[in-house]
Length: 108
Image (cartoon, rainbow, N blue to C red; front, side):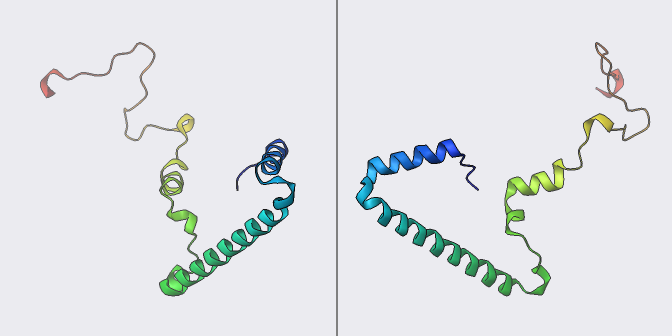
């Protein structure tokens, strides 16, 4: 979730020891664990309440799909394969290096 490696975790622990001191650190860790458990419980109940409210039609709804970035990636970017792209209409092709685009004097 946070992608914290071993080195980053050690730095965070050392900073926590300096900020809170070795005496208060266990109490702070317990309070942080309670906060995380409470947040997970609240999010879990909100997710189940949302799925109950929406009904059986949305039983397989994944809340991550509602993220706009995930939506764009899923529906727009997954199907793009630029190397294997074929012309969509007959006669359409990529321009060669140095080739000028076709120009119609009567159309402009």
